Length: 252
Ligand code: ADP
Ligand code: MG
Image (cartoon, rainbow, N blue to C red; front, side, top):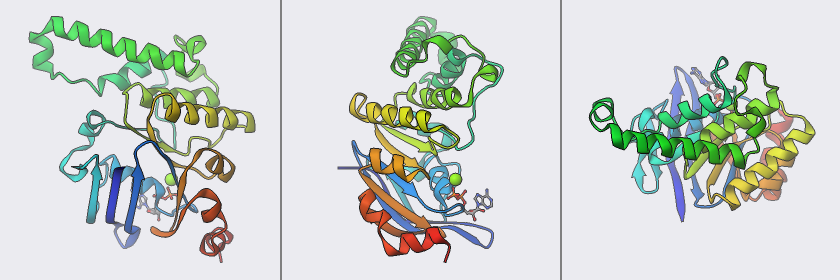
C-alpha cells in the first residue's frame, strides 16, 4: 500500500523549474531513495513534503490525506519527520534537550490547554521523556545523553539529528543525505541504523543519498532525478545501470 504519493508535482523558483511534473509513490514499510546530481531537485522534494514550499501544480498525499491542506507545523503531528542536509541542532544544548525540543514540536496540547490541564500535561511530559529515552537507548546514545552538541564529533551529531526525528515517532522518516560527511565506518553504522529503523520500528524511509553503495544496501527502490524530472525508477541495480542515469552522472 502506498503511504506517500506525489502526483504531477511542479515547483519553480523564478525562472528555474526545480521540480518538473514529478510523480512518485512510496509504499508503507519500504526504504526508498531519491538520487541525482547536485541541483536535481531532491531537497526541494523534501521541502514540499515538509510543506516549507508549496508546489505550483500537482498533489501530495500522505496516508490518503492531502498534505497541501496542512501547514508545515502540522506535518510532525501527521506522522512525518525529517533530518536536514545541513545538521540543524541547538549547539548550546545537550543531546537530551535537543531531543525533548524535537518532541515538543510534536506536542498535542495548546498553551491554554497546558495552563488549564496541568495534570494531563504531566502525563504528556512523561510520554515525551519516555519516547526520548527510548530513542537514546535504541541509537546507543547513552554516553552522549547529557553532552553539549557543540563538543560532539560530526558523526555523532548525525546520529543525534536522526534521533531527534525518530523521537517524534513518525510513520514516515525523510533523511536528507544521512551519510554525507561520514567516514566509511560511520556510513556502515548508518546502514545498520536505517535497517533497524525499518525492521524493528516499522518506519517507512524516504532518503536522499549520494553514496550508491549505501543506497544499494538499504533501499528497496530508487528514483533518479535530473533537472527536476524523473530519469529512471526501479531497484538500485536497475537504476544504476540505466543509460539515462549513467549519462546524467557523467555530465554529458
Ligand atoms: P538537490 O537537493 O538535488 O541538490 P535542490 O532541490 O537543492 O537540489 O535544488 C534544485 C534547484 O532549485 C537548483 O537549481 C537550486 O539552485 C534551486 N533552488 C533550490 N532551493 C531554492 C531557493 N530557495 N531559491 C531559489 N532556487 C532554489
Ligand atoms: Mg540537496
